[in-house]
Image (cartoon, rainbow, N blue to C red; front, top):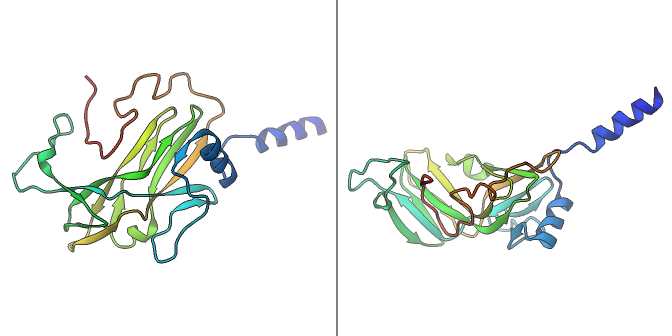
Length: 201
């Protein structure tokens, strides 16, 4: 009975789950999972970014696509047009009221085949009515993360380039999946820069 109890305890202790800072650091430095990688939280005068206890706070780049409807375009995820956006390269992006921007992570991610990553918005922006879309980074995927930031307020709102915008949480599966994002040649594999929506043909 004691051996059974010990076996169960050991199984629980070794169950996969959310991964801690030391695992994220090892994967980033030795396997290129996050590049560039900041080993500790940086926050002085900025919205924080870098390694946290159980996640990694990513920065947004200075590349922004600001949604506009000056041409009365229809938003169609199957036939999306860049005419709906104004491109800006800036350190501070102003999001119009009740609108959104697309940007990308500064970091390039390479996700292991036995890991699923979940992207969450930072509370500093959420408390200002700016919402970052919750999105997964699938096993085997790599690229810059395209981020959508919605301004839910009736006022213009600022987003700061090269500062924290979203936190990534890393969940390790019990084993590698049979078919990874890379194996099925997913449509957003290896994306660089801000990538617009598309369908696979």
